[in-house]
Image (tube, rainbow, N blue to C red):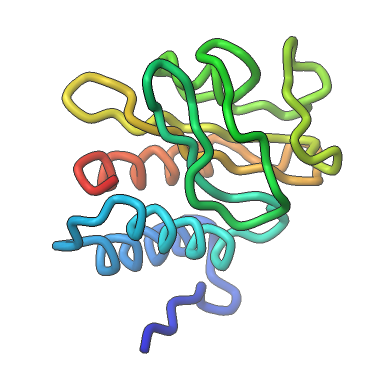
Length: 159
């Protein structure tokens, strides 16, 4: 039985270290990419406060397709270059303090007010994005970006 959770009172840096350690432990040696995404989506939901959606979109046949997540039902398909996820699928992390100010934002959950989307790159190609939404304005910062980018690097060969 696994009992991965952030330590009470942990700093953001300590929380990301623990999250990445847990994700590494759960995905190391597991060849099923969907199972790995599912466990990591659950970890993200457990470790990161003030998020109303944590999960993955996979790049399939030139578009993003919904993968494992924690949260309300979401958009199933997103074209590359459309919305925050579609912008990240071009290969660059998107840290958006106010999604309503982001041109072309796709509102899958009307409660979302800020978003962080990090591409997962394998062999120079984006294979998925990690998507985090929050009902709070400016929920995500440079420390979140760095933590999720570290996570994406570990997952690049596992999802």
